[in-house]
Length: 596
Image 1: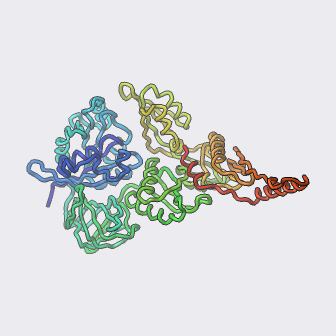
Image 2: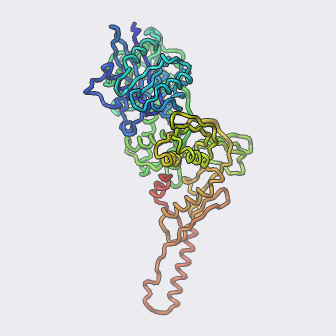
Image 3: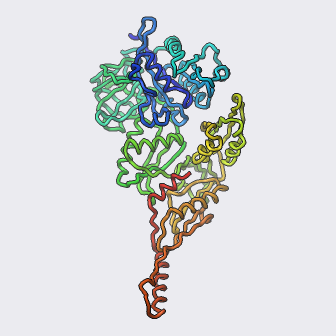
């Protein structure tokens, strides 16, 4: 029985060097030669390379020789952004240990602490490391003090490394062997394997990444997914080094992938337990913690005939991203589409980009919205993710919206303007802390809805790019919120309906009415554009009628003939105004929803 397995992942805040550390570990252990190496080798998506962030977790098996012993490392690279916390929780469920990485130039940040607590809750052994110690701007002592204070560890427990140049990597790997426990191993137990990731291959069907907790998986074995009840026969087993290697079995404690020609995507749930038909386990493994979406948005195909393709694309994406929720919806203005729930704004942006790139579907996305808690006069409490579904004001007792704790790290000279921005966005000041020579961190409680639009762009503009922001979800708070409807020629346009703070409603209504006036083409009758709260109109713009010269053909004759033609035109326009339909081109919605 092999006792030399180490399953571990790397966790940190975004852009602290996780992927670079993964690269060095792969290079040090000989997973790839220097000639085969490239930056961010585990970031396989083009989007990850472009943005310089990890979006998807990735598992790789490495062999490491130490003291004449051969160790098997199963390394899982994880994302760092708060929107991908769910990916991190899935990585931790498949590991016994984690390397917690801190950037020497930035110190401990919000997601560092959040990920550390996730690992502690999961009972993982944590190794602490400070990265980028070879940079001239590195503040190693400050980082050490912060880590000692935050995590209650000694200075000797903190590794000083440079993932870029390879400083301290060997010592870190020795500590992985020494401190991270090997997994429980018993190949004779009933098979229980945790599905922690999956993706769709058009030739082989669904490929499942698994961590074998009990028993073993072999080629030709008949397996059952305990949650869905689906039964399949395994035809291929393997692991990545990161090159794919085919093997005959995965033993207890090991990490790898399985293929069973699974073509029905709904048969697979990430977090499900695989067991064997011959010697079935009685209970599934505990799944992952379920996270609730924070941001909702409607996605509609630009070409309405591609609605079925969009549903198929969502099915395939949810295979690898089970935090994404969606359901079909219909809009009078946009046709058939889907309502999606995302963990945050970056998550939403990435999913939209993936659909466009991977599945070649051009999308119109409605304005993002958050999940509101509505208490009705009857005492019933409902949740509303689509503003057009908000009940009439007469039936509403109160509306609550989600708040986040916002942390902005900024040089001192921009603090005044950034505080003003947060106040303007209904933020409540919490605290301020001194970071180092010229940097401060300010904390605000702020509605999630207020940071969804132009907040990040304005923050970067005010600070000339020097300020950075993080947020973490808080509780719901009651506010004076209203449903703002938009009417075009007296007809409500459901795609434009929004929920906003009452004091901001007039400005938002006027701004959007002006924008619609610019974008909607003229008709042969006058078109009224109105913003309304309930039955009260708060803003209005009018698109004047298209002028047609009906007298052009009258080159002479009695004036009464001209008057008759003008009267007929007047009557026709009056009739059109009553019965005419306003056609809104699709590009009008694209321009409006792409505006901040």
